[in-house]
Length: 130
Ligand code: THU
Image: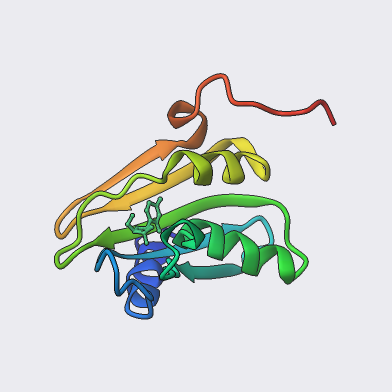
């Protein structure tokens, strides 16, 4: 699986974003160790705090399908044009729950791609000893 292909899945699912309040559409595609990919979009709500981010939608879909080891996530977001859309703090923490040290976060705008290590975006992350 190359990261361009994963980004394409994020861009495709972004079209289904439910975001009538912010008009900021986000799509995410999560690659599992199994090779399977699960996608998600942001799902907003009239009670704004009930909004679900695209990344956590994708995590939820994966876990519901019995997956809990992830390799990478591609995120495509923007109001109109695509702009780099780093995951919010809550999503970083949720991804960290299932991520190895080399888990990658792939972002894009209209013309470029950026790749980060999740744990560079979330230094000194919280975890309970398992
Ligand atoms: N959003 C995401 O889906 N993922 C993020 O990591 C940041 C923000 C969504 C939530 C809301 O629907 C919209 O973007 C604007 O905040």
